Image (cartoon, rainbow, N blue to C red; front, top):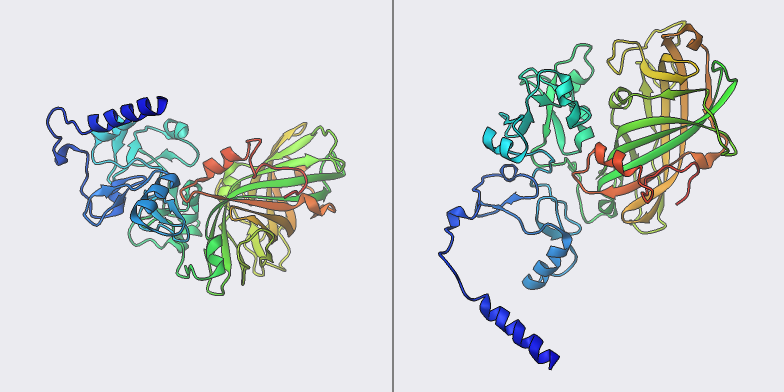
Amino acid sequence: MRIFVFLSMFLWLVIGCERIDGNRVPVSNEGYYKCIRDMECGIGRYCSNQGICSIDCVSSKDCMYITEKEGLKGDYYCSACGRCLPVDVKDTNCIISRDVLCRDDEECRYRLSEEYSCSENGLCVKRCSDDKDCKRIGRGWSCGEKGFCSRKCICDKDCYFFGWGYKCLLPEGVDESENCNRETPIYGECVPREGGIDWGKDLNRQKASFDYVGVWGWNINYAVRTTGLPLVSQQDSVSIAYGLAKIIQNFRNGIDIHLKLCSIRLKNFKEDDSEFEDLAYIIVPDAYSDSIPVLVNSADSVPPMEAGATFDTNIVLDIRGARLPDPWNTPLPDFENTTYAYDQDRDGKIGMTTYVNGILTGEVYNVQRWWAKYHIRVLDRDRMSGLIDFNSEESIVGASNKMFLTKINVVRHPQSDRSYFRALRLPDDTDCKTVLEMKDREDSFLKFTPHYRE
C-alpha cells in the first residue's frame, strides 16, 4: 500500500511538471552573456563554441551525471572554469581569479558596495585616498595613483602571493626581468594572467611527471643552533615557512618546483621540547618573505606518483640581502665590512630587516646564504613530505641597537627530524592568504609539528 501511495505521488509530480503557467521567458532575458573569450565570463565560467558564457558544473559530482549521460568513460573532474574534463587534463583556457569582473560602475556597487568602481581593466576596484583605505582588503594592497586600491608590483614574483594565475602588468616598454633588479624600479599592477597559470612548454600527460603538476601548499621547516647572540650563549630555533608552490614538468621527464614564500616565522625551542620562555625573539616581517625570489628545485626524473615512491631534488641556493661575485664562496658581508650588501626588501635599510622583541627590542639587518634539497616521499596523489638537507649561513650587517652588532655562528641542529617539509595539493586558484589560513587548523596536513611525521 505504501509503495502504491509513493508511486502515485511520484506520477502526480511528474505530470504536474509538464504544466506551464504564464508566458515563456525570452532567451534574451535568461541571463546569457555573449562572449569572445573566456576572460569575459568571470569566475567559474567559460566561453562556449556558441559564443555564450557557460558552465557545466560547480563540483566534480556534477560530472558523474554528465559523463554517464553522454556515455563518456574514465574519471572526470570539475575544473575551476566550470568544465568537466578528464582528471589528467589541465584547464588552461580561462582566467582563474578571485577578482570581480565588471562592465560598469553600477555593477560593482550592486555586487560589492558604493566604495567600488569598474576599472579600465574590467575589474571592480575600491576608491581610496591613502593606503589605510586599502588595508581592510588584505595584504599587498595600497592606494594607487588613480585613487583606486591596487596591488603594486615591480615584477611577476610580487604577484604570486595572489595566486599563480597573476602577473605584473608594467607600462609598455618596461622589461619585467630588468625592472625586478633596478634600484629605482617602475611600478605596475598585479592583474589576472590571460590564459590562467603558465604550466610551461613541456606539459605531456604521457609522462609519469604529469601527475605531479599542479598548485601545492608548502610548509618547509629548518632548525638551527646559533651562538654569539646577546644575553644567551646558544639558542636553538626553527624557521617555519609557508609557501605556494607550482609544479611543472621539465624536458628531462622530471619536475620543477617553483616556490613562492608567503610567510616566515622563527620559533625558539629547547632540545627536549619542554616549556620555553623567550627572553628575546625575532619577528620576520612580510616584506622579508615578499622580497625573496621564487625558489626553484628540480628533479631530473620522477617515479609514478604512487604511495611510497621516493626521489630527491637538486639543491637551490638563495643569497639574501647581498649580491656576491661568487654566490657559493664569497664571504658574507658583516657590520665591519658591508661590501656587497644591499637593501633587498626595499625598506631603506641595508640587508634584510628583522625585528627583535622581548627584553631587548630593535631592528637587526642581516644577510644570509641559504640552500635546501628535498628528500621527497609520496604519501598519495595529494600529499608529499620528507626530510630536507640544508645550510644556513648568516651575518649581521647593521642594527638599530649596537648591542646587536655581534659575530654569530649558525649551524644545522643535530636533531635532523626537526628539518622537513610537507606539501598538499590545492585548487589551482589558491592564494597565499588561503595557505596561511589553512596552517592554523588543527586537522591541517600543513600544520607545524616540532618533529617530522608522515
